Image 1 (cartoon, rainbow, N blue to C red):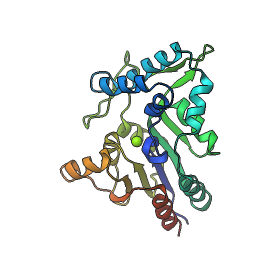
Image 2 (cartoon, rainbow, N blue to C red; image 1 turned 135 degrees about the horizontal axis):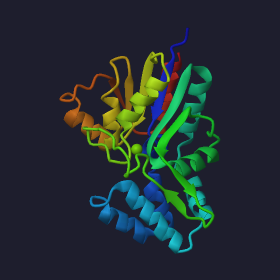
Image 3 (cartoon, protein in one colour; image 1 turned 60 degrees about the vertical axis):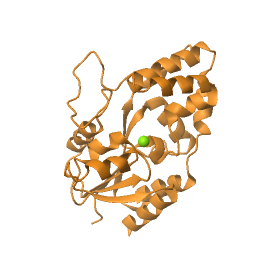
Length: 242
Ligand SMILES: [Mg+2]
């Protein structure tokens, strides 16, 4: 029988070739983009994006403006092929685990014809209000119980805890888990993976650095393959299918 596998995708700079949160402001308000860069070490990231979206709305930018910017965001055609063929040719469940938000991700997936790709999209909730304001909230409500992460995840979401909870909801255990990621916050979930699992780590970004600095010390068990362009992910997926 074909192995039952789970492929977990980070979204920004992993599935997509850009960062949604920053891109919106690069397209519509470079000065707000600069302000985000200046404040990112002081203000929690999701809160910072939420307040920046309010500022953008205050300037008269509409839902269409935001969605149109997302539709033209760089997204490699090889990634569309890679995930479509993987799903069609193997026994694979796909999970999206992202620090962006539900509105950005669903807009882009629709634009690429991938709206039915993922079993679940675990991210920060966001929805457009009738006024056109995109209201963004942390996945972990700041007024309720907080996650217990010790690996450095931001308060809004611990990808490691979310991955473990997903796996517990989808028993029996997958034969293999493959994680596609690039960022510092993708380090926590890959620490929970087993020796038969694999991380596809994008080159030259935060995850590669953390694996090099902390992988051995933290007991990283899964295999690591590196990639730079989506065509290489496609190539690896093709090898997995045979
Ligand atoms: Mg990312």
